[in-house]
Image 1 (cartoon, rainbow, N blue to C red):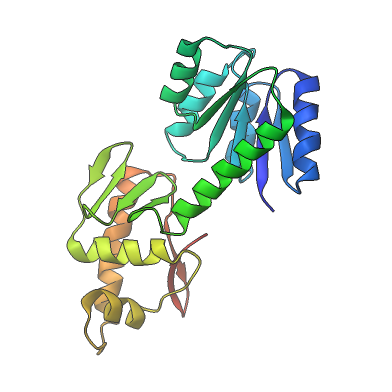
Image 2 (image 1 turned 60 degrees about the horizontal axis):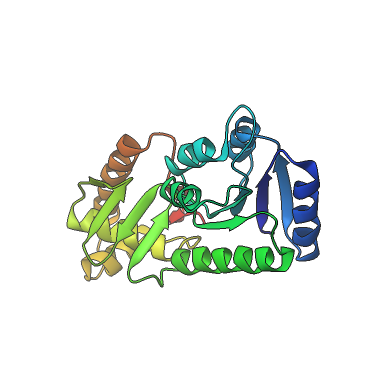
Length: 227
Protein backbone atom coordinates (compact mmCIF):
# COMPACT_ATOMS: atom_id res chain seq x y z
CA UNK A 1 0.00 0.00 0.00
CA UNK A 2 1.24 3.50 -0.84
CA UNK A 3 2.14 5.43 2.32
CA UNK A 4 1.88 9.22 2.54
CA UNK A 5 3.34 11.34 5.32
CA UNK A 6 1.35 14.50 6.22
CA UNK A 7 3.46 17.12 8.02
CA UNK A 8 1.30 19.99 9.32
CA UNK A 9 0.83 21.62 12.74
CA UNK A 10 -2.81 22.49 11.95
CA UNK A 11 -4.84 19.41 13.03
CA UNK A 12 -7.90 20.49 11.00
CA UNK A 13 -5.91 20.73 7.75
CA UNK A 14 -4.10 17.45 8.48
CA UNK A 15 -7.40 15.66 9.17
CA UNK A 16 -9.02 17.06 6.01
CA UNK A 17 -6.12 15.81 3.87
CA UNK A 18 -6.15 12.47 5.69
CA UNK A 19 -9.86 11.90 4.96
CA UNK A 20 -9.42 12.40 1.23
CA UNK A 21 -6.27 10.26 1.08
CA UNK A 22 -7.91 7.43 3.02
CA UNK A 23 -10.84 7.53 0.59
CA UNK A 24 -8.30 6.96 -2.21
CA UNK A 25 -6.89 3.90 -0.44
CA UNK A 26 -3.61 5.40 0.80
CA UNK A 27 -1.94 4.58 4.11
CA UNK A 28 -1.32 7.68 6.26
CA UNK A 29 1.25 8.86 8.80
CA UNK A 30 1.07 12.31 10.41
CA UNK A 31 3.56 14.63 12.12
CA UNK A 32 3.06 18.06 13.72
CA UNK A 33 6.49 19.51 12.86
CA UNK A 34 9.73 18.79 11.04
CA UNK A 35 11.49 17.11 13.95
CA UNK A 36 8.66 14.64 14.53
CA UNK A 37 8.46 14.09 10.77
CA UNK A 38 12.19 13.30 10.44
CA UNK A 39 11.87 10.69 13.18
CA UNK A 40 8.88 9.08 11.42
CA UNK A 41 10.53 9.27 8.01
CA UNK A 42 13.64 7.47 9.26
CA UNK A 43 11.58 4.65 10.78
CA UNK A 44 8.74 4.09 8.31
CA UNK A 45 8.92 3.73 4.49
CA UNK A 46 7.19 6.70 2.83
CA UNK A 47 6.16 7.09 -0.83
CA UNK A 48 5.20 10.79 -0.76
CA UNK A 49 5.24 13.72 1.67
CA UNK A 50 2.64 16.51 1.96
CA UNK A 51 4.46 19.29 3.77
CA UNK A 52 3.45 22.55 5.46
CA UNK A 53 6.04 25.33 5.75
CA UNK A 54 5.25 27.36 8.87
CA UNK A 55 5.65 24.93 11.79
CA UNK A 56 7.28 25.07 15.25
CA UNK A 57 10.72 23.59 16.05
CA UNK A 58 11.61 22.80 12.42
CA UNK A 59 9.84 24.44 9.47
CA UNK A 60 9.07 22.85 6.11
CA UNK A 61 12.03 24.40 4.30
CA UNK A 62 14.54 22.93 6.77
CA UNK A 63 12.80 19.55 6.80
CA UNK A 64 12.82 19.44 3.00
CA UNK A 65 16.55 20.16 2.85
CA UNK A 66 17.31 17.40 5.35
CA UNK A 67 15.25 14.84 3.42
CA UNK A 68 16.87 15.79 0.12
CA UNK A 69 20.35 15.08 1.46
CA UNK A 70 19.52 11.36 1.36
CA UNK A 71 16.22 10.71 -0.43
CA UNK A 72 14.30 11.54 -3.61
CA UNK A 73 10.81 10.84 -2.25
CA UNK A 74 8.21 13.17 -3.88
CA UNK A 75 7.39 16.22 -1.75
CA UNK A 76 4.28 18.39 -2.19
CA UNK A 77 4.39 21.64 -0.22
CA UNK A 78 1.01 23.00 0.89
CA UNK A 79 1.32 26.39 2.59
CA UNK A 80 -0.48 29.63 3.43
CA UNK A 81 2.61 31.48 2.14
CA UNK A 82 1.42 32.76 -1.23
CA UNK A 83 4.27 34.99 -2.39
CA UNK A 84 6.11 33.89 -5.53
CA UNK A 85 9.42 33.95 -3.65
CA UNK A 86 8.06 31.46 -1.10
CA UNK A 87 7.15 29.09 -3.93
CA UNK A 88 10.58 29.53 -5.50
CA UNK A 89 12.35 28.83 -2.19
CA UNK A 90 10.18 25.77 -1.65
CA UNK A 91 11.05 24.36 -5.05
CA UNK A 92 14.73 25.24 -4.65
CA UNK A 93 14.95 23.39 -1.32
CA UNK A 94 13.72 20.24 -3.06
CA UNK A 95 9.91 20.27 -3.24
CA UNK A 96 8.42 18.72 -6.39
CA UNK A 97 5.21 20.78 -6.31
CA UNK A 98 3.68 23.68 -4.35
CA UNK A 99 0.06 24.51 -3.48
CA UNK A 100 -1.30 27.44 -1.49
CA UNK A 101 -3.92 27.34 1.27
CA UNK A 102 -6.88 27.33 1.10
CA UNK A 103 -6.84 24.59 -1.53
CA UNK A 104 -9.32 22.40 -3.38
CA UNK A 105 -8.97 18.88 -1.90
CA UNK A 106 -9.74 17.33 -5.31
CA UNK A 107 -6.89 19.28 -6.88
CA UNK A 108 -4.62 18.14 -4.06
CA UNK A 109 -5.52 14.52 -4.78
CA UNK A 110 -4.85 15.03 -8.49
CA UNK A 111 -1.39 16.46 -7.76
CA UNK A 112 -0.59 13.64 -5.34
CA UNK A 113 -1.46 11.04 -7.97
CA UNK A 114 0.54 12.88 -10.63
CA UNK A 115 3.65 12.95 -8.40
CA UNK A 116 3.29 9.25 -7.61
CA UNK A 117 2.92 8.39 -11.30
CA UNK A 118 6.05 10.39 -12.10
CA UNK A 119 8.02 8.66 -9.32
CA UNK A 120 6.89 5.20 -10.45
CA UNK A 121 7.74 6.09 -14.06
CA UNK A 122 11.31 6.92 -13.08
CA UNK A 123 11.72 3.80 -10.95
CA UNK A 124 10.51 1.59 -13.80
CA UNK A 125 13.51 2.63 -15.88
CA UNK A 126 11.55 4.55 -18.52
CA UNK A 127 12.88 8.04 -17.81
CA UNK A 128 15.41 8.56 -20.63
CA UNK A 129 17.92 6.12 -19.18
CA UNK A 130 18.01 7.76 -15.75
CA UNK A 131 17.26 5.58 -12.72
CA UNK A 132 17.09 6.63 -9.07
CA UNK A 133 17.98 4.16 -6.33
CA UNK A 134 17.92 5.74 -2.88
CA UNK A 135 20.35 8.66 -3.00
CA UNK A 136 21.96 7.45 -6.23
CA UNK A 137 21.18 8.70 -9.73
CA UNK A 138 22.23 6.32 -12.50
CA UNK A 139 22.46 7.86 -15.96
CA UNK A 140 22.72 5.32 -18.78
CA UNK A 141 23.38 7.96 -21.43
CA UNK A 142 26.44 9.48 -19.74
CA UNK A 143 27.45 6.24 -18.01
CA UNK A 144 27.65 8.03 -14.66
CA UNK A 145 26.45 7.45 -11.11
CA UNK A 146 26.12 10.44 -8.79
CA UNK A 147 24.96 11.47 -5.33
CA UNK A 148 23.83 15.09 -4.90
CA UNK A 149 25.67 15.98 -8.11
CA UNK A 150 28.94 14.31 -7.04
CA UNK A 151 30.00 11.54 -9.41
CA UNK A 152 31.19 8.15 -8.20
CA UNK A 153 34.00 6.65 -10.25
CA UNK A 154 32.98 3.21 -11.51
CA UNK A 155 34.50 0.95 -14.12
CA UNK A 156 32.42 0.14 -17.20
CA UNK A 157 31.63 -3.35 -15.85
CA UNK A 158 30.66 -2.03 -12.43
CA UNK A 159 28.32 0.50 -14.01
CA UNK A 160 26.65 -2.11 -16.21
CA UNK A 161 26.10 -4.43 -13.26
CA UNK A 162 24.54 -1.62 -11.22
CA UNK A 163 22.34 -0.49 -14.11
CA UNK A 164 21.17 -4.05 -14.79
CA UNK A 165 20.10 -4.60 -11.18
CA UNK A 166 18.55 -1.12 -10.86
CA UNK A 167 16.54 -1.46 -14.05
CA UNK A 168 15.02 -4.74 -12.82
CA UNK A 169 14.54 -3.89 -9.14
CA UNK A 170 13.23 -6.78 -7.10
CA UNK A 171 14.48 -9.46 -9.51
CA UNK A 172 17.31 -11.73 -8.39
CA UNK A 173 20.13 -12.28 -10.91
CA UNK A 174 22.53 -15.19 -10.54
CA UNK A 175 26.25 -14.64 -11.10
CA UNK A 176 25.95 -16.54 -14.40
CA UNK A 177 23.12 -14.29 -15.61
CA UNK A 178 25.02 -11.14 -14.67
CA UNK A 179 28.13 -12.32 -16.49
CA UNK A 180 26.25 -13.24 -19.65
CA UNK A 181 24.32 -9.96 -19.76
CA UNK A 182 27.21 -7.64 -18.85
CA UNK A 183 30.14 -9.38 -20.53
CA UNK A 184 28.02 -10.66 -23.44
CA UNK A 185 29.85 -13.99 -23.29
CA UNK A 186 28.85 -17.51 -22.30
CA UNK A 187 29.42 -18.10 -18.61
CA UNK A 188 32.17 -20.58 -17.83
CA UNK A 189 33.12 -20.51 -14.16
CA UNK A 190 32.70 -16.71 -13.98
CA UNK A 191 31.19 -16.69 -10.49
CA UNK A 192 34.36 -15.35 -8.84
CA UNK A 193 34.73 -12.61 -11.46
CA UNK A 194 31.21 -11.34 -10.76
CA UNK A 195 31.75 -11.57 -6.99
CA UNK A 196 34.86 -9.40 -7.19
CA UNK A 197 33.08 -6.76 -9.29
CA UNK A 198 30.06 -6.76 -6.94
CA UNK A 199 32.37 -6.38 -3.93
CA UNK A 200 34.25 -3.44 -5.49
CA UNK A 201 30.97 -1.84 -6.55
CA UNK A 202 29.54 -2.11 -3.04
CA UNK A 203 32.67 -0.57 -1.53
CA UNK A 204 32.38 2.46 -3.80
CA UNK A 205 28.65 2.93 -3.16
CA UNK A 206 29.10 2.54 0.60
CA UNK A 207 31.95 5.04 0.58
CA UNK A 208 29.58 7.59 -1.00
CA UNK A 209 26.56 6.92 1.25
CA UNK A 210 27.44 4.77 4.25
CA UNK A 211 23.84 4.41 5.46
CA UNK A 212 22.49 2.77 2.30
CA UNK A 213 23.02 -0.86 1.30
CA UNK A 214 21.99 -0.87 -2.35
CA UNK A 215 22.88 -4.35 -3.62
CA UNK A 216 21.40 -7.23 -1.65
CA UNK A 217 22.80 -10.77 -1.63
CA UNK A 218 20.27 -13.58 -1.82
CA UNK A 219 22.36 -16.44 -0.48
CA UNK A 220 22.63 -19.38 -2.82
CA UNK A 221 20.74 -17.53 -5.57
CA UNK A 222 22.34 -14.24 -6.59
CA UNK A 223 21.98 -10.48 -6.25
CA UNK A 224 19.25 -7.87 -6.42
CA UNK A 225 18.27 -4.31 -5.65
CA UNK A 226 15.09 -4.07 -3.59
CA UNK A 227 11.99 -2.43 -5.08
